[in-house]
Amino acid sequence: MIDQYGWSETLGHDFAPHAARGLLPGRVLIQQRGQYDIITDTGELVAEISGRLARDAAPGGLPVVGDWVAVSVREDERAATIHAVLPRRTGFSRKAAGPGAETAQVVAANVDLALLVAALNADFNPRRLERYLAAARQSGAGVLVVLTKADLTEADPGAVEAARAVALEARVLAVSALTGEGMDALRAVIRPGLTALLVGSSGAGKSTLVNALAGSARMAVGAIREQDARGRHTTTHRELVLLPNGALLLDTPGMRELGLLDADEGLAATFEDIEALATACRFRDCAHGSEPGCAVRAALEAGTLDPARWLSYDKLGRELAHTVRKDDRLAREADRKRWIAISKAQRTARKKPPV
Image (cartoon, helix red, strand yellow):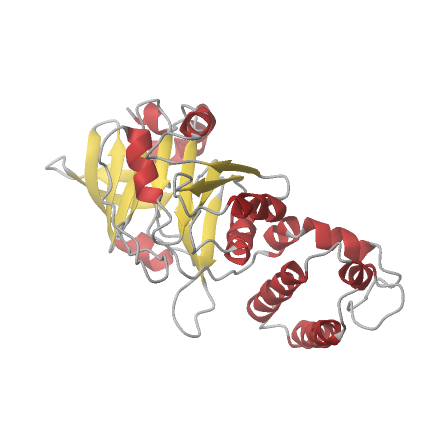
């Protein structure tokens, strides 16, 4: 049974020490408040983590949806205890919610493809999409941007081009679960054996996509608010769904805020165009301010680099500089000076009349 959920020979090799202890492999399907629904060769079970795992797990090391785990089955055979989590191939993480939080929260594990979902309505935001792209690329999974509600009469065709401009080499698909537009192309991507993660804001249409792909009402859906086109939370937990074609789809609650943590590589990949420009600057430590020979400033003045994209890069870079290096005083001070210089350069650029 677990073969349908992605079990492989490689996983079997990693699991060998646990098998020697008489434990069974399982995959986490649902996670809710310390309780897990898992799939094993004996069927679906309700599980809790062992006291030792709760005590000894490293930060971010407790099970999440998509994880492969080692379990013992209790006497009633309908419940289990999770004793260990197998090494993850990929992990989608975000900064833990709450004021002052500086730890990473793993949202999903062992994902092959991250589907970044945004609706083609008034809530579409290229800057938010850049944030999701950085987190997804940091996870190690592939990336596909899915623009939903393409059937809306008020859908802005320019939003599709705006998404492609920030997605760079990542594919962008405009779809409508209502009319079927783009759905065949999406189904072709979500192939048998693949685990895909749906992430996006509330009201983006993730649950509607799950229902369309599953061919049944697996997830509750709700209407968006008319005044600002934003959605209400309908999905309240993360769930791994087996689709009729053999693919696995992991739905998540909507995220209005996605804080980045330890995402330097994802940020660099998302802003590959700006990173490439920076390598052409005359000075290696160029702060992209008043230094002569700054390729970034030249691109801004020539109009070949979108100022809004540059500001987004600045904002996300500051966020990472604050969280990733907060414990390193020297690195923190160097980052502070660098981003101060960048901000001054931006203010100067905004005062100049357009050419």
